[in-house]
Length: 503
Image 1 (spheres, rainbow, N blue to C red):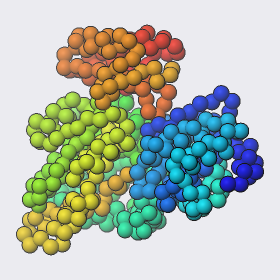
Image 2 (tube, rainbow, N blue to C red):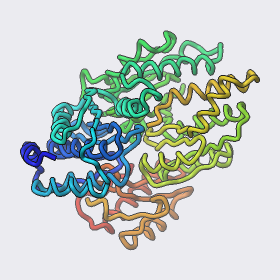
Image 3 (cartoon, helix red, strand yellow):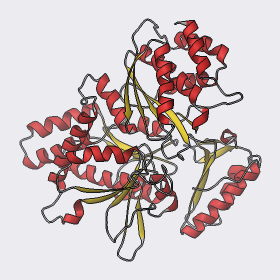
Image 4 (cartoon, one colour):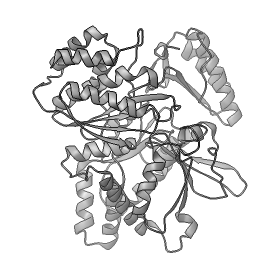
């Protein structure tokens, strides 16, 4: 380690006095002007992580669904997964260290994680379309360079694309080619084959049209690049493409999910298929209006259910005893859980909120389906299940079984397998509050006032806020319950600032 170079470059990226940040589910995320030192230091950390695992590591500069003036950074581990939890602690230590402590913290990380500083390091970088992202990416590059790491800057990419690149690089091309063209070719080929096999001859032309709200973000740029790879009968129509409005302003997956209405700028006709990305295009929700004009949201719970129905039918056809399960968080709608368990007879497991917890649990099954209600999610196939499915698609003599296996094979290729809130402490997969004292008892009393209701609170993994969830028989009752719980949190958790806002 070049101590003088570290001091020199660190001084160019000074830490604001009194600022403390924590690496959460979505990495670091706050106002862009406060992140320069964090980006530099995450460049340092990525080099150390790369040396520790002898693999390429990814860094994505994005704040997803947050307002345009925010930004953030998250690291990507070797197989395209989120940063290992043990390294989240190192990230937090490094981000909050004072200038004079940097070298000491780096040395401690190297000792604890058995980092061989003489090994080579490789880092892939990507960013979203925020005005601050290019400059902050350069700060990442400074951090990588000062520790002698090599980097490849992919520039403007979606978060899933960067995860894909990292996985491709570390599997030496087995997962795909680590280029945007490779990404488009792999996914479009699987998609084309899939719709050939599942679209009935009677499908109308309208069934192949899709209106897409791109949240004024990176999704618009990358979908435009990918469109030539789609089959000609698939017609996409892009809205909120970033040419007129601000990122995530009155649009995007989070806006549609929270407000239960279409984004600004997208006119819907009855029974048209529509969907919305978030700012970095790693989240999606679908929706439509019926003939009466009523808005229907197909959120993550419904997406997971529809995928489960589809997969269960295919697995039954191939005749294999592959174990499938759905993984949810406490935020999942209770009706979706009951339908999966009681009607579909698919096991459902509940874990703490956050993609990393869902992902970890889903890995325990041959086929693990998980989607948060907000649209984050995927399907994981175990290596054993994937091998068996590909073998059946190639060698099975029974026509029906072979065709079902081919559809599953295309599915595998299409899916990219990638106030002080801490005053609230929870248990039971975050469904019951432990602290502050008396809060859970108050919530229990409020829930008893409403039919078919439940409610819980938890500290956010991405922002300095408390999340409140409420469910009841009617929308009015759910809103009222959420409001009462928010007031209880406000009074019992210290009463500082404004009351929490239900979501």
